[in-house]
Image (cartoon, rainbow, N blue to C red; front, side):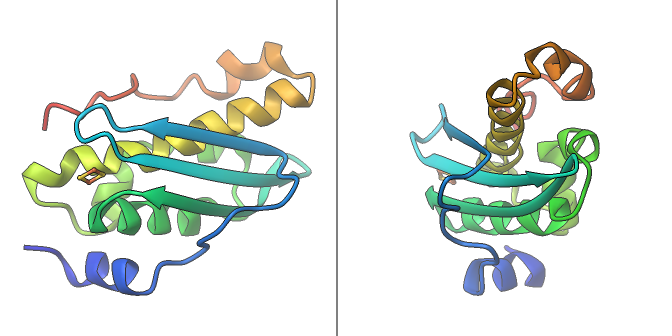
Length: 143
Ligand code: FES
């Protein structure tokens, strides 16, 4: 049912926790199941210097969150903002169709953390520019 990569990230999740005094924090609830995801980031020179996640979610949510933290560490804000929920699920080799909604949490929480950082940094005007490549929130929630 789950790929080896999903099982690996579920069993040994990377970057679990919360960054103290983070530069940006994003939290989102999954409308399908009510689970919650929180991602905190530190930004240095417009790159994600550190990223951590906490979730009250299922195994698939843990795996997608773990994967997204690995995908974006060291990336520019723009590159991180362009990572979609679908791309995270694909990087894990896919999720069972009835668990695709779980992948909505990870990238969306990350995008909210980036938005939070930009606003706190007084760069609110750049939000539409940096987050322009985003798919609509919960584009895949019907899967
Ligand atoms: Fe809620 Fe998977 S069942 S995130």
